[in-house]
Length: 387
Image (cartoon, rainbow, N blue to C red; front, side):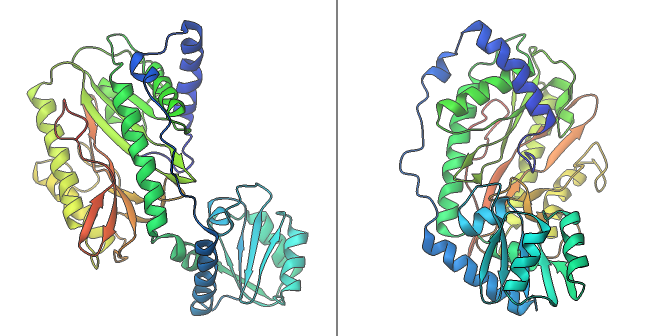
């Protein structure tokens, strides 16, 4: 599941609290000490590909009758320029690409310089309202519209180079999780496990984090701030990922610490069947909502739900992923967008049973001409988190 910002309050608090304890103990688990960087051979996005993205953006502008597109610093600016600077903002016109430092006065100047004092201006979703408001007052003949048709239209379908970077991020995440789960012990806190995962990512040459949840708290999709200590028979859920050249992974594993009850085993296997159903349904030409429906049917046929009620699946089956941990499109009821090759999603139907436990299995997938393929091998069993 992860988080759009990749740094939720819960994860930040967990790593902060546990990092002090790890530093004081000066003890690094053997499974972490053995890790080595996995960053050799990474190929950044080439300048030629970024130029092609800009040309596609201009084509989409023409098709959607936009005279300019306004983008502030962030993932979309990085997508087109390769610059991570907080000072870089973009102004597309049909003929030129301008940059500015994020103030309304400079944005107005760039628009005027590019001959856009009237017409339709697409606004990228992260642009500040105060900025658009100021520009509108200076140039009242402008009409502001959503730029999603351009920005999402470019970013939703990944190239081979993008998929390779996402594959590396997912490979690193699985290696990290494998090492971290080897450190589980009676009495471990969720903060200690989160800190161990962060340390493993650093040893692997990247920055990453994860939310860790134990026992009954695994029923809460975004975790809990309540103190938790691992006990025999608890389910352990870890979720999140890392970034490689800006491209994200997002993986969740739910595993038993000790021996599972039959109830735990049954619900885990139900979750895996729901994940399989979503994967099988994710084919080109199908709607996003049909993938959600396929996973949800498995869970409601068991007797949970209906719909988004709990016990059952309380949220969407998956989200888009790429430069942002959550991006377009979403596998959720009501989204009738058709799947196309190159689109990437998380596949993570969750079963939440408040007061007992929850199970989430998450592997990201990409759409091909023949159907969906996962970046990571799915978990085969409740006591076998790695395929």
